[in-house]
Image (cartoon, rainbow, N blue to C red; front, side, top):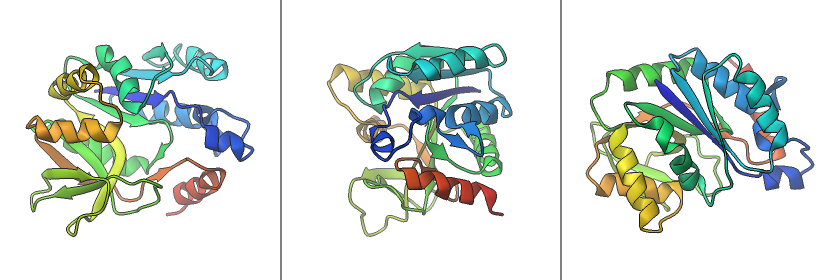
Length: 232
């Protein structure tokens, strides 16, 4: 399995709230977010882990170069316009099979993630998108699906039948990268527009409920994430 991490944001909201670390280095129980993800991926059949960071993160780069001695990392240093453009920067490393991509601040329980990856490895669909009923996002992306959990749409506002929002974890195949390339060429931006394009291109995406998922956007989210991971 190929994995990828988008970590090119500057974490400006955290900095404004007094957090001295760049977002990838924010510690949970003493372990930086990016190192935590790398460890999880390594324990779940990682053939490669591709990571994009921006040029203003020398501390993050130093940690990744150290970790690269022990893990199969591909490191891309590039300033990008959006998460979708960050994914595009990683695309050359994701060709040739299935991959799972997430943002660096996505917090989930490892045992639930393991079941998710296992389901994706067995799936014949184009993608298995992690979704959650827990809404803690300032601008959630609502997901509609049919009775078989096949995704029918992604929405900025909640439709009547919306039960889930996107969890920010994307398990996809090569066909999705063709859609991504078309989005870039046509001047689109934002991951949610890419996800909508997957549907309009006819890719078969299944929604996979992954329990509670937390994003680290504010200083208070760090404690929330530790309490979540520390609870049974």
